[in-house]
Length: 250
Image 1: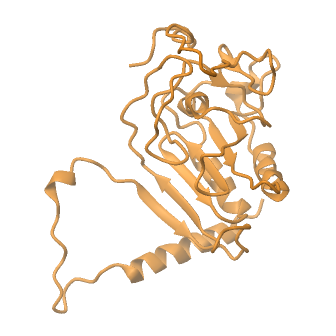
Image 2: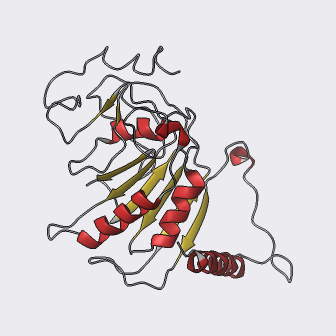
């Protein structure tokens, strides 16, 4: 896979950021430092402008990568309990005790499920389609998913996946294309395969639980795949808490 385009864009973005930063000296003073924020690390954000047309409904082609996102809590909550996440797509947080099988999905995987995948070091490739469909978006994400390197932790499983990758539609996205890892997000308004593949390579296997276990994995595409049918039913307070072979995470 050629990655020279991504590297060039990264350098250009860094140079542009440097030129746009406020100057000190020459009669200008530096902005005051807010000491109250010093103890809270802020995410690093890189914005790229690939030479590609924006997807339908988008004004410009823009890729935004955020890394170093702080995850304040990662506890199991009862299945069917909704969780609000601080980033879009989610980059970690509380989640259900089950996780999705590592595959491409037609049905939408609940965020409370796929955040558990992120905790296990997975990458989630997500997309939001208009009513007319988005075949080219799905095709690019599928290429990135299938071309990712195999994972030795997964290949040791009998009949297991080649890698910890989940591809799913996600109607709550702000952009047509997104990817998530624990503590990192990728969003794009255009097709830029090199930068997406780079994100997958850079953030794969970085979750706090580096495992490819399938012990409590569910398949939301299958009626008997183990995923909860929530509807208006009350949350199942006990389901999945010991899915990892132990007590709920702190």
